Image 1 (tube, helix red, strand yellow):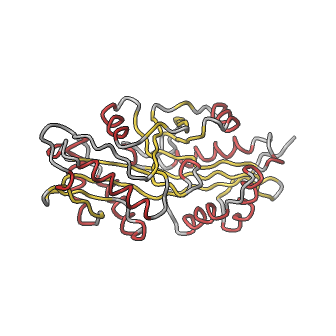
Image 2 (tube, one colour; image 1 turned 60 degrees about the vertical axis):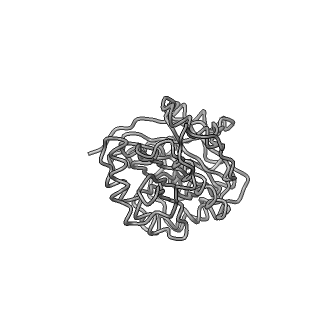
Image 3 (tube, helix red, strand yellow; image 1 turned 45 degrees about the horizontal axis):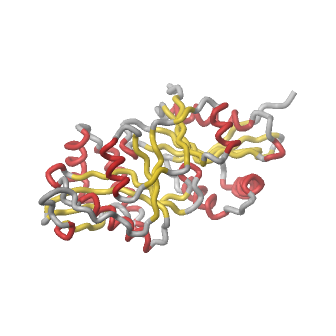
Length: 312
């Protein structure tokens, strides 16, 4: 009878084996992607989860995940399953199921109640695995677009102020109180911890400052929070993730949102980031309409979710 795999935390010594397993599955050498993930683990990134499964003293598979708390308008922390892989020669031994079960226990111990992931609709084996693991299709739509400047130039409404009255600049720590006030005005919730964490990310990642604020004649009018990510939801190319955009209702229909995204796409293009992705609930029609006007389209990726038990 096969011995159940032993689950443990991924260690720096596992890098070569992880790269080899991934190459055996994908046919590509993606060392740079995994080096970035291992560097994040070594830095003590609290949101990261990385587990390995050993059989007969050898790494047979791994799972990589992280925790999001507030991104995409969320009101509770969620786990994101970025990658799960098993050595092709060691499949059908329960390794993938053991890894995902251990991941759910780890996330539940952090108070996470839901795990999410994505897959291209053509990745039939992966989609089948998610179905067998009790994931279900999420009501959230995955949207994406290139970073080329192709916004529509229609007038927002009669009498709308021209976009050249809106100035856009990089976000800084001093913007945090205004961002929190604006978000509270829009959502009715106080999400100070989320925005404090995001502001800290802006300061730490000063070389990739893609989060922006907009001012209208000197008044705080809106903001967009985005990040350049390597690997979220299993993506392996440098992709910008649009987490949050907010416009003060007092400046609605004045081109603030368009000005923010125009500058965001320009900045990302200069960083040679080619794609921007985001998520939106299927029934948030106003947000979906705005994103469509600014060039976002339905992605070929499917979004999955699964509720998990919360540990003590």
